[in-house]
Length: 420
Ligand SMILES: [Zn+2]
Ligand SMILES: [Zn+2]
Image (tube, rainbow, N blue to C red; front, top):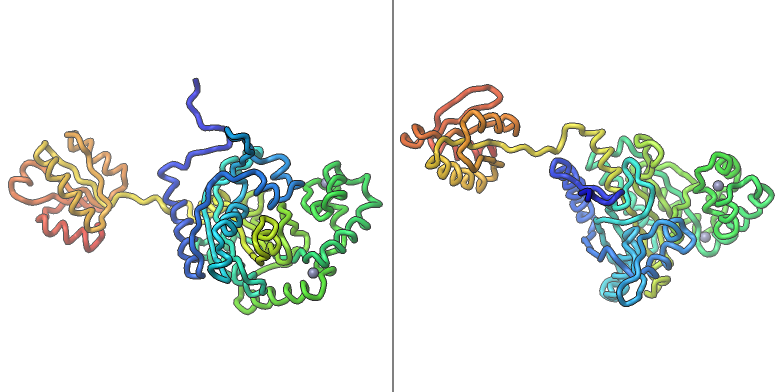
């Protein structure tokens, strides 16, 4: 039997994890200063939660979900995205009754049965934020501003293009859909099979089609931004104004549809040209009807989700050498008595915040120095029988190849001063 991970699922190995932690830590810091708290929901929910929120006619629900029958016969699904579970939890725990505004963020693994490719896995990680309560355009603006702050903080904003649009609401969107049907109907036979189906079910999603011919036809279709009702137009104008005031960049893209059915009014997408075809790094928008749809009281909401793997690829591009935390010092020893001393010293220096490594068996000094070299440490502290007797330590500066004798106290001072 072959020992391997399931296709589309991969390990994140220790030498990559530093970078992951960095991206996650920055998210926590930035989101928390904007008033968000972390929520952790289960990776599995009743299938119905996703079908009702994401929409039964979307690709995710039709083709990509990991759905199982549980032992009691109920249908359960590994979460393909984070919002539905957060909304379910928001309702189940009556968060709406405790505070008029809830700000939540999450990070974790999601699951979709897609064709695995670079930067896209079946088990993948997302970071997301959801803001429940306010219907005002300032809320939309604030979450976009926070998102952009985050991209700046992790250093990948130069690679990114923030696009925004409005999808209208229950007043103007149906009218716009009718406009679209009117536009596409005469060209029906030129559309691909999927788009012909979309024309019946949700003509907006024709804008999602990747086929050249469909894209060509869709180019001349009417724009949603010219078809917003007065309230939606005012809302969108205020979002744009607020972004401009803060200096958060954006471009208008009236073709943003979003693969999920639950969005209303503001939608946004952050794309990159650095990663080939799969170019969305994150996306989000307002979803004022979803909480009610899932059984809660009418609650406006806005949120976003980001693909960790794609952010990581961009981060690697920006900082190819960064984030491999190396040991500050290695403690080499000669003889078993020195080994015990080395063990105690490592403990003491770690207490002072130094990153220390050492060997546990009695290897030759040569082989220990070789390992220290490989670890890339700045200093190697050598404890031999001779040094032990005289109560000193030999400290070797690995970059300068200089050796110096120090007392234990001096080594501790050095550790504190340099964090070694
Ligand atoms: Zn098509
Ligand atoms: Zn409207």
